[in-house]
Length: 460
Ligand SMILES: Cc1cc2nc3c(=O)[nH]c(=O)nc-3n(C[C@H](O)[C@H](O)[C@H](O)COP(=O)(O)OP(=O)(O)OC[C@H]3O[C@@H](n4cnc5c(N)ncnc54)[C@H](O)[C@@H]3O)c2cc1C
Image (cartoon, rainbow, N blue to C red; front, side, top):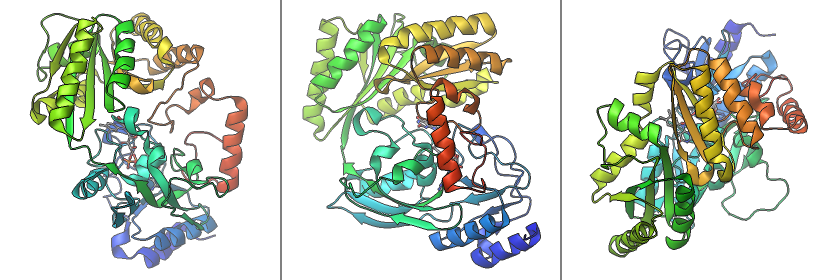
């Protein structure tokens, strides 16, 4: 078996000087969510091509060396966490966009491309890459696919998984599985790409992908509306889905405590309504023609006001106002700054149970952790609710309450952030014993030596 020093030398011979870091810059990399912690790995390997990834993995497989894939390190499940002696494999140098097919609306690219660059490249061709979220400036294609990220526009375009036409993956033993298909339809046997999407770097290293692009929607309308009860929130969602003819692209609900925190506790965000309401909803719709779309948007909101489904509304009249509404919804930093230690939750459950569940969690927090606030918000159009609870001292007790209650409603412990390390002990609340067994069987088949991101999602 190769010693660590020999292994690093052999890896150096594959990737060259630019492709490996072994000095103090390794510890400067994060090891936890929100860019926290210090990476205890022995080296960061930065291959530039699929062939280099393949050769590095073949060496690591032979040596039984643990490898932890890193993308932009913005994931929220501690999936990038290393132990001393682990090797980080970062895709950061694999950042080439290889081909844009404007007619076919597809893009082929390496997995280290940052999401913002992908979005900009699509926009230059009057096309849209539709998955979008707050970490777009750092997160990479490989990380997005491994986490199956969702974000702000799932209601219209689906999640990361829904954008993938083809995938290239390097297996833990170094073999390369390439299926860079470019068509929406492909029933030529088992669709293996979906096994890797959402597998959080435990089954293979995503090196290239073909992604789907959409016609650009150059105009959008944004509004913040207030609702006086949860039934009205639900009816508003259903009404908008129908009356905006499929163009509803965001339906972000903020419970009163969240809105109050953003407008009263933190200085930055303006209070937009005179009265207080139990729910506020950020609504966005995309249009090809701003004038026609704008008229339709206003008409639809007027209808909602007349029917008393919404109690009040503010429509953004400029890009700046729209950005300011989103800034309030996305102000994670304000929560981290004021509520740490903060526990973020990312759950999914049927909409009919959402109000009841949120109330019970809020009561549970008051009983278990009276010093904490429980801010509630979510991509409700997708059945996805977030809680940010803090400052919380007894994380285990709060976790247990939140996940146990969720299981009573048949929901999921993770709607979009993944399982990683933090949630794996609660996975049985969402997945049956047979499903967990199948996950272990897959892991053993793909990675018999358990060298790729071991201990994430499931233990063997
Ligand atoms: C401010 C903020 C807002 C966010 N908002 C949302 C949101 O609204 N919706 C949402 O879904 N998510 C959101 N996220 C989390 C989101 O999951 C991540 O931003 C993104 O998916 C991870 O991309 P990354 O490149 O940073 O991956 P990393 O964090 O580096 O890695 C994530 C996981 O993928 C693995 N991995 C990385 N690259 C590869 C690869 N090439 N092959 C195999 N495995 C790999 C890692 O080992 C790890 O397990 C948010 C994060 C932040 C910081």
